[in-house]
Amino acid sequence: MEELKKRMKEAPQTCKLPGQPTIEGYLYTQEKWALGISWVKYYCQYEKETKTLTMTPTEQKPGAKQQGPLDLTLKYCVRRKTESIDKRFCFDIETNERPGTITLQALSEANRRLWMEAMDGKEPIYHSPITKQEEMELNDIGFKFVRKCINVIETKGIKTEGLYRTVGSNIQVQKLLNAFFDPKCPGDVDFHYSDWDIKTITSSLKFYLRNLSEPVMTYRLHKELVSAAKSDNLDYRLGAIHSLVYKLPEKNREMLELIIRHLVK
Image (cartoon, rainbow, N blue to C red):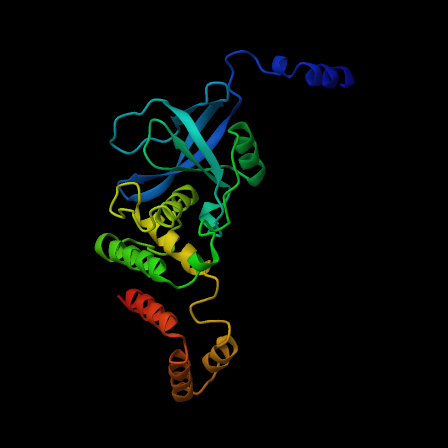
């Protein structure tokens, strides 16, 4: 055992036979079937030297033409962070052959780590691309961003199932935010561009609102709002919250009204 370990450390290239995949095993990906969207199982093989991912379907769509192995060339791999129970052990990849992001689900957390290590996967970026303090406040460019998001969502995605529950690709969210809040040309982004799907826009809107320098309802009124919301007396609760809303700064109240009208719709 010690001799074998020594040989492996000294010549790691001999541990893998030429032409053999760096890693292989089962992965799931979401696809549209006749009865809706579901997780589809593939047997996947990844060759690190050529960055080639071969995906062989283990299940076939009823009545559809039999699919053969699909060869994809990897461009990017990033771990997916989500609290959703059906999105555990996931990571996102981008390839040369397919537009957009492909979400893959491993069999376990340990299995995901192995795939990401083989694919040189990156950790998701959690810092806000809106780096300047003034850009994280409720200003004109922020209002423009929220209005454009709402306009596209209400125009193209109002009937999308799980509209704000479905999480968009972290890669695409970062791209959209970086492009929109680019100091060289702020706001110069076409939200109807094909790359920005509804999931990306809803996730970007949530990201922006969560990363403001201060919540829309402000820190100053937080305790009073929580206290009013917990009251068992409905008339008192409504009156107290109504009063507190009108204590908000004008821009905060305007943003709150914008969001509430959108959520009601």
